[in-house]
Length: 91
Image 1 (tube, rainbow, N blue to C red):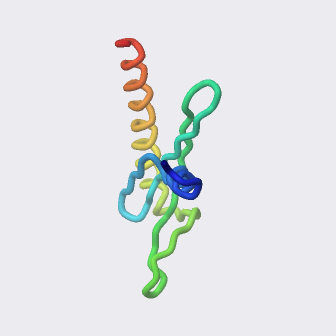
Image 2: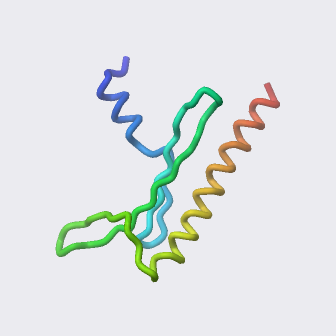
């Protein structure tokens, strides 16, 4: 039986991550009354001295990768909907 803290830890993790270079998308899954909804957060990973850090601010040169990562995230979410829809029809 999972404890409350284990359940919270599991809920705090994205269901999928996509990374291209230093740009990362985390895809989160939320259950709502009408089914499952996905949200996406984007981060830029950078090194400050010896420490790795993350930011949600992007420069001009990051935007092309943000666009590509967003497209991959959209495709992944779309495919999840197709998979669950196919399972519903087969049942």
